Structures are given as structure tokens and as C-alpha cells.
Image 1 (cartoon, rainbow, N blue to C red):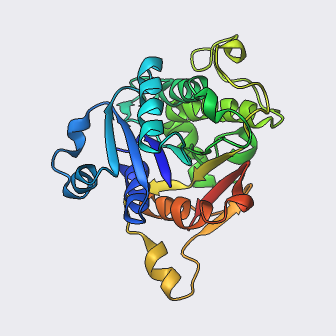
Image 2 (tube, rainbow, N blue to C red):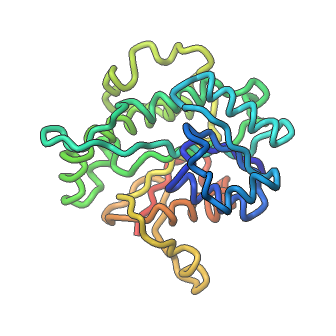
Length: 278
């Protein structure tokens, strides 16, 4: 298996990439700072073996994303099986606006760049890689109603800014999947008018090999998946669609779900949105 990972310097992207590498996959990372892995012995060991490639670039720069695709294709001898985008950034706190992203359209713009630069050799239905994009639970108005009341209040007041960006990403994904969009369009500061005509963007419904990951409120907790699975217990709830109730899930368990469940049972999850929660 050959994977292209954006947002893999830490958290979900990192944990999932390490799992893939440990299972024998090759992984190309697009990193704003390749120095992020200077002291990471595990990643460096895979780099020295030729299984991991570190590409310096910013997903907000369309030429850098093209460079990442090219490096991943080279590592995979012309093919890419999996693309994982878990891009995010640390927000700043505002007393009036809650948590605010330094770049308000980070996820949306990065995702547009990813799809716009999709190599021609990977655009035909039979050649398309599986693309997994991490957004969040409760992003759309309909999904927001399924959250527990305390989370609805927290998401509305504290996470409005970051979630506007995820909302834009969800709109782009719905376009690529060909899913009917019944929500209000994202703000133009997130997704400008005319975005559907951007060069290179797949036509509506042209790319179905997508899984949208919608985790609950993320924590830095341990991975329950590895231990509970050994006991025959379900470590978390994972559904295609929406689920009522539930508060949190760890980043490690989202990585566990991506590698151990979604990729292993792709036909079950392709074209869907997966909500994962304890």
C-alpha cells in the first residue's frame, strides 16, 4: 500500500501514518517543516529504509501540493492507494469570538488544492485512490442537532470559527461525491463564489472514493481500539450517518478506525461520512 498524507506531523494523521508504516505501507508526508521529524526515531528509521518520504511544502500552496502528489507517485511506482488529509492548526482564543484560526479557510483551501491537483493518471474511476478527510461531528445544521446539549453550546460559542472552515470542507466533499447539498452555502470568506469553476476541480459527483471522518470532540487519550478489540469488545461506536449522544473520542482511536476498520472494509464506508464516538 502507498499513501499520501497531509497534516501528518502530529495527531490523527501521524498516528494513522505510523500504523500504515508498521503494516508495511509506504508513506509520503507533505510537511510545512520536515524538521518536525528530526528527533522521531520511528519515522527516521522508515525514511532510511525508503518507506517514508518527507516533502517540504504547504498545502495552501497549490504548487507544493502538486509536488507532494509527484513524490507520492514516485514512491509508489506510479500508483497511490490512500490519501489522508487531517490538516488543522492551533486556534487562538478571543473573548468575543471564542477559538479563532489564524488562517480561517485552512482546511477548505487545502482540500480544494488537493482535488485540483489530482494527477491525471489518478482521475479515472478505476485508478482513483481512496481519499479520507477528517472534519468533525456536528458541522452541518442537521448534524449539530444530534449533539448532546452541552456540546451544542460549546461548539456554537467556542468552536464557531474552526467549524466554519470544516463546514466549507464538507461542502467541497459533497460536490466531489455528488451528494445533494441542502444546507446554507459557506461564507465567501471560507469558500468564495465561483469555486466550482476552479481549474482542475473534479466535476460534481466525479469522485466517489471518499470517506469523510467526523469524530466526536477529540482528546489526547489512549487508543482503546487495540486493547478492547483483543477482548472482543467494541472500543467505540462508528456509524455511517449520524448518531445521537456521546461526547468524545481519542485521536489515537480515530487513527485506529481509519487503518484497522475503514481501509480494511472500504466497500462499507466508501462515499459515506463516519461518526466515531465513545
